[in-house]
Amino acid sequence: MSGQGGAGGFLGLNGVGNNDQQADYRDPETSPKGGDTSTTPLSDEQRQAHVELVAKWGQQLETATAEEIMEWAEEHLEGPIAVTMSMQDTVLAELAEGRLHSGELVFLDTGYHFKETIETRDNVEQRYQLPLKTVEPVLSREEQDETYGPRLYASNPTACCRMRKVEPLARMLNPFEAWISGVRRVDAPTRATTPVLEVDRTGRLKINPIVTWTDEEVEQYITDHDLIINPLTKQGYPSIGCATCTLPVAEGEDPRSGRWAGTNKVECGLHT
Ligand code: SF4
Image 1 (cartoon, rainbow, N blue to C red):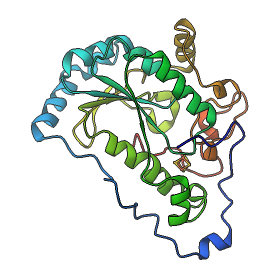
Image 2: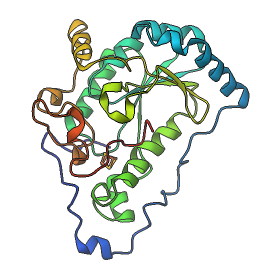
Image 3: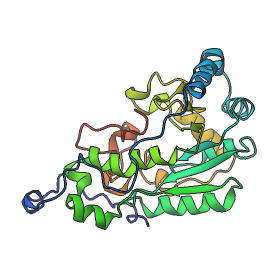
Image 4: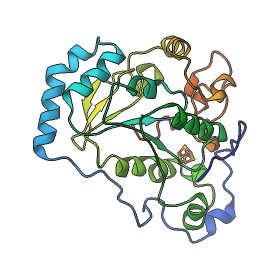
């Protein structure tokens, strides 16, 4: 599955024609057959062990560096750890490399990404030793159009994100004990109180090592470590999602205001 196209690939969220609405398509609330829609919960014992880790270490890790948080994960967790990569930048890969020996980089390819995002994924695969897994939805873009009608991202972006992001991530997480995310508190009001360490609804540990970082700290880390970046971040796209749902934003505007612009949607559902 490949990217959607370069910068300027936004197709608009209001372009659903009458013909699309009249066709006999499947209800977008019903996901396609062929893939689990949720993650298998860990055992009660594993969940309890994670709850105890959060109780014991959560507060302390709030003031730890991102490197220390990664080293803590390596020391305290036995199972494999997924490192989720948006391919906006490569901060998490750099933090994980050499620290998380059972880490695996994972990338959700929705099929609607900018080509620059796919190129960034390919560059990451070349640079880092950690394995990189690309996770895809059950349906290709074409199959989704046939099943649910064209431009589902416009008519029902919540359902589109659920089938192309949330459910693939849920399936991907099955073999992992924990996952690392790049969520930051400054991203959005919905993330303002996200802790460093939490237990997700399946009992897995969710670790947010850069949750306290400002935009300036991210920039500094990228410069200091000469990281691969998605070139779109320098072309007016400070927050990059699917090409169909991301607009460039003017300097000084809320960086995430280009995501699902014109709708009241602010989260894809991966972190809520
Ligand atoms: S961001 Fe847009 S295209 Fe991507 S999964 Fe969500 S609704 Fe679909």
